[in-house]
Length: 362
Image (cartoon, rainbow, N blue to C red; front, side, top):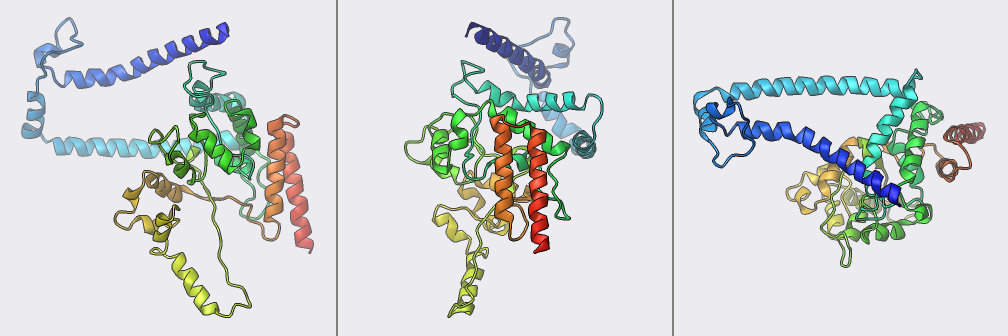
């Protein structure tokens, strides 16, 4: 226990020093903007001021071409951002797809950095954490493979071939295993209601879940009511899921049934969901005046719909459910420690191939 306390203190000191180091330039810039020229160039720096000098701001907006300055900054910032995104995408692809000296060390370093928030809020790592765990989700009903997808893993490629046994898949598996250290031991037995209530009781700092969690958290008796925020899934790779509606072939009113489905899934029909504790699934519905502002959840949902590319279920007709079970089984075997991530992915790929070949033969 004493060793953990010392480690926590050292970690906090490091974070405080880094925080001051990165925040001070911003503070100094703002402070300097309120100084006179004489105060700026004094030998002894002025860190605190009793009176703020506002003439600098008045002069900027009345005697200089601030619009041109702003446009220049916008162009430079925009170009820098664009170039950074392009280079980062290329670097990420190379890191995931190619094996080179130092590859694993670099990937693990990135992984550890991204795990810091979950680690800080896990009491076994930081006794001063206000909650027991840094992360939680429900693992009982198919969420395991969603964690895999959200962290760069895949199931099949555009040619309907298994596409999980590769560097990206291994990295996703390792990410899950690292995340497991900061989650409750019983998370693999938690279903929807148990996991949601666990988070609503204030036992975890973060939870990855479908939007329905929001209602539980905002309900009466919730320890986290009005204390939480919502964001897109890690890596901006949210998973798309949903329900389907169809008409039976022996329906006596097929045309009426189709009309009902058409309305139910329309932009206006989606509005009925809001009145019945559900959330719209069409981006056009959020564009209706007042909808986006009606819930703190909806900004994140809109962004999720814009980024979503991955389906919750494996998109192979007739055997989708079976392939989903295959993924769940082998990922959880790796989480239990009975196999390595590489062995789990190899077994997953082999079973996918076998199942898909049987369907092709039939």
